[in-house]
Length: 475
Image: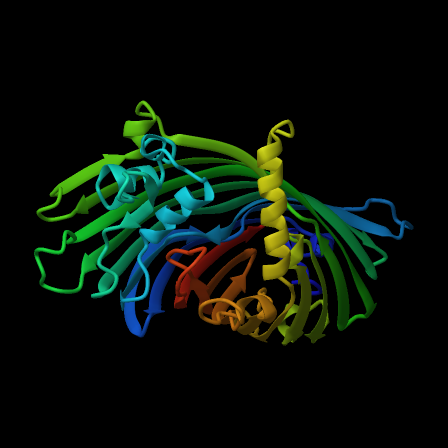
């Protein structure tokens, strides 16, 4: 939409497109999302699926013509709209066998990095990890012959093999309320801007299970299940600016700038662990709530998304005022996204340890992410009141090869591709559009990471189907 304009979605891409309006319209866009995921982990493949309600741009645009007969300013438009910018509803199932490492070893890393030499401190100071492992006997302190602490060990039976499974259920999304304005100068230059208020809700429930791969009931380990809950709530603000130039009636050229969104986030989280060590201690369970006086953990912080810069071309076939003579269009966009612009920051600038943590995190992201180029192509053929459309989008890999080639499992070939098709009908001030967008997404996820030892990525291959129905009324 960078160059085409004349549609409410221009508020979210190039708001200069709002300036093309000469009438007003009300738009409603309900939809449904069908998410199918497949995960390959240590040679094993597992799949899951989930469907959810969704919606596209819904709002109103007022076209305000100029009443000055000789003015080159032909009019302006104001738009208000809601849109679902991201949909987090998905189920992911990961399964595989592992004889090289255990999820529980990340708890050992916590104790080593914290230089914890007192087991009593270890049992209290890490309520979201190592403390739960110690208190359910998944971990044990180790001693020398003089009863001096030498470290900690996991009772998970890595050497004889572990069955690992993880179920991740996520819900929520990012809703964006935009208010924008566009202007029309002499039917040649269009310019516009919009302010976006973003509301984010993300809920993640993860259950990771490790089970002894043998039938040995005397090795002091049967299974453990680690359940993690995270809820993130946030609000953010961003701006979009753009221009469209129409050098001849059939051609439009667009340029747009989408600023970073500056968010304020609050995380709420808890963890529980259930361990069965058979004859050693039996089945034991503990939650982080037990170690926090019944309270969930909370943390607030700030986040900045990458900026985006785009340009586009649109060619209109049949530009006569008589709609029966209009034949359709083709349009193409290219977009630059600076993923290195991702940045986290503390909400409280007085806490030096938090500031140091986010400095390290941002430095890591600078090594992980790079810039990417996104490309979109679309077209429409019009048969008087009926239209057919098709589109294609290719979204570039945001990861750096150099970083992931040095990790356990190369996931540097991440990608996202959209293919869409639709039908439209408009007549006498009303229009109805039905669209199907098929997304093919390749990415990766680490069930856990270790400072030492082998850990693996699960390669994710998702297909997402979005069905959107737009109903609009011109007035």
